[in-house]
Every structure is written in C-alpha cells, then in structure tokens.
Amino acid sequence: MGNYGAIAEGDFPGIGWLSSLGKAGVNKDGTLKSSACCSRESAERSAMKTLVNKYRYTLGGEKGMVSIESRYLSDEQMSIFVEEIMAIVSWEYIGGNLSKIHIDHKVFNAVMKRVVG
Image (cartoon, rainbow, N blue to C red):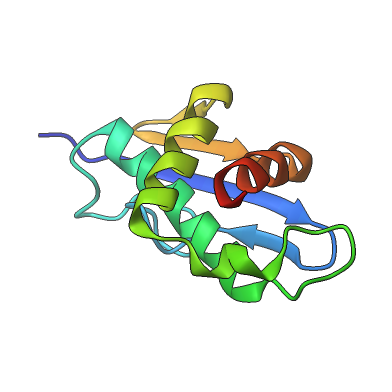
C-alpha cells in the first residue's frame, strides 16, 4: 500500500478560492499526511469530491452560476460528476506521492450543469 495525497483547487466567480486542503491525504499546509490514501487514484477522487462538496455548500445562486439544485447532488450524481471531470482533467505530480490540479471554473460548471440537468 502507498501513501498518496492530492489537492484539487480552483477560483470560482462569486464564491472565491476553494481547495481540498486538509482532506484527500493532505494536511492543511499542503504536506502529505502520515496516514494518507492508499492509491493515487483514490487520493485524486477524494480531492475532487471534497472540492465539489465545498462548492456545493458555498454556492449562493449568483447570476450565471450553476443553479442551487447542485447543492443536493445524490450519491449517483456525485459519482457521475467525478467520473466525467476526472476524464478531462490532467493532474500535476508535485513531488513524492502528491498530485495537484487547478480546475478551470468554466469546465467545472459545464460538467456540473450536465450532471444536475
């Protein structure tokens, strides 16, 4: 078993900067936790889910943003979102067993709109 961590982050208009720091095998200071994720893939998926959850819970229905219904993603919708976004993003390996991605809000929102309908 490995010890992997991942950071997903992005700047979202009307919301601000969101990051998965503190989750997905990574401490809040960006270092790898001593007990992190067992694989790179699980760390990256966990980081993406954390980013989605932070987005959902800070979403305020601002003009031009995804509708408030995205706050209520089912487990199936979350899974579909993560699958779709993971298929189009490229993770950067930043040293050791850490990976990172900066998500473009336009890509993120387009996938979210497809998932929530």
